[in-house]
Image 1 (spheres, one colour):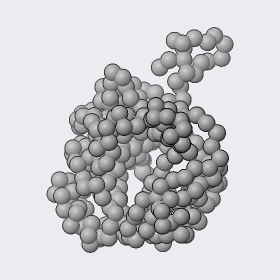
Image 2 (cartoon, rainbow, N blue to C red):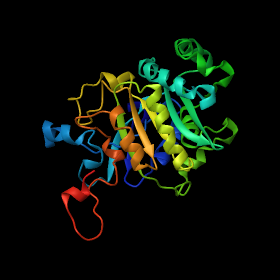
Image 3 (cartoon, one colour):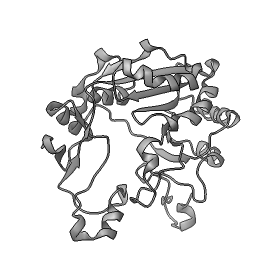
Image 4 (cartoon, rainbow, N blue to C red):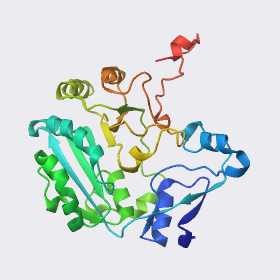
Length: 304
């Protein structure tokens, strides 16, 4: 059904298998990661359709297959990742990133990750541009000018197919010759699991606030602890909250995730994230919500 830019997907298929199958059929179509249900809008009515569409893990029903819309992608995209240590002003760069990342052109995005590499806290700034490197550099001029501290150079850029870029970001920014599309089909590639919580940041966190976070990295020895920030920009910022039941749209600068959560870190970030209520993305739920210790069960015990 490539002419109609759609694909039928059966239950049980992994997102990697879907990516791989689409890439076998076309290098000009893709499916951005997501979960869509089968919806008969007319028969269920507008209210139920609205509640299910975008509802994430709270949606209900038995799904045997669903039809997804594919989106056009260029034959080549451009990726790059720049790593900076604290000694290389990673904190100040991230502080400035917060004011620029959600204002980039719609065909360019850049995420940021705080992690520990070789016992040092680093920030990794990874970008994806829907186009070739030469074209990207013209688009990137605004980004380079707003964050000269990154020291980004044209030779830092790497051209890939769209599906190769999925492997690049998922497998930890590998070199092009190490990107194997077959890993998308390997259901046993990673057996690691971790707890994670997601918050939304609506105002830039100042340098002092960011520096206070590093103590938690040192407490854990940096083992499996990282903080990931995804900018909410482009079309995300243009869709009104009332459009679908996923309300996290305009007003959020970025999505802040804490894999292998340290409870004290979550408490620390409370003043810096959305509040009244503190919002979180449902599909990245805190596993302690609703959990009781053995024995006595109470709302107070299960709350956070």
